[in-house]
Length: 285
Image (cartoon, rainbow, N blue to C red):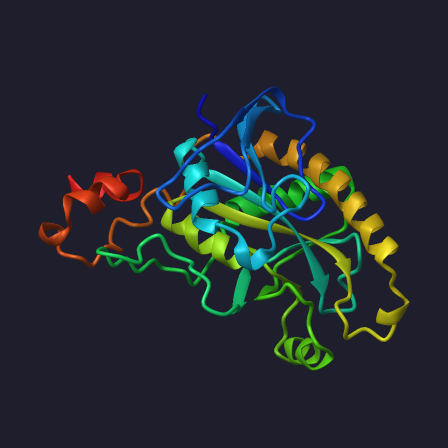
C-alpha cells in the first residue's frame, strides 16, 4: 500500500494511535536504516506512513539522526505530502508553551550535518528560498484552529546542533536576530524533502521559553515532560484533522529537480543511476 501522506513525530510523539489497518514496514535505503520501522495505515480515510524521528523510546539524538534514510524511506513508500511535528523552545514572549507554530523559514546553526542526497557523482542545486509548502502549511493551520489549538503562522525556526540546549548568550543572540522558535532537527528534513520532490511543513510544538526568559529557572523537568505529553495528544488530533484536507493531487514540488541537475548526464555512472533512480530516474532516461 502506497502512503500518499507522511507524518514524522518528534519528541513525545512516538506513535499515531488513530492509525487503523496498521502494519510495520522495515526499510533499508542506500543511506542505511531509518530511525525506526514505518507504521503504515489509514488515517481519516487516507493512506499514511508514520515515523518516530528519534525512534520509539527516544533512542537517537538529533545530531545522529539518519535524515537521508528517513526521507528516502518516505519517498520509497510513495509519500508526496510530509507533515513534521517537532518540539521546540520559544524565542518570543507571545509564543507560549503548548502553542503550535508553523514556521515559513529556517536558519541553520548546525555544524556539518549532511543535508543532501547528492554528495557524490551528481551535482544538484535546489531552489530553497521558500523552504516549506504554503499549501500544506495552510492545511496545518486550519487543522490547529479546528481542534482548538493556539497556532501562530509564519516565523523562523532556528536549527541548532545540540544535544545541549542554548547558552544564555546564544539564546539572546537568536532573539536579537528575530528568530521565533529553536529546535534541533527540521532544517535537514526540509532540504531533503525538497530534493525528494515532496511538500513539507513543520508544526513546531512549544514546550518552553529556551533559557532567555526571566522565569526560565522556575521551569522544572516534570513540567517540560507534562508539556511534551500534552503537545503529543494535541498533535495527534491536529494530524487527524489535517490529513482530511491535504490535497489529493500531486505535490506542487513534484518536479522540483527538473532544472536542478547540473551534471552532464553522459558522465553519470551506471552505479549512480541505480542509486538515485527513485529520486531522479525520470530525468535521466
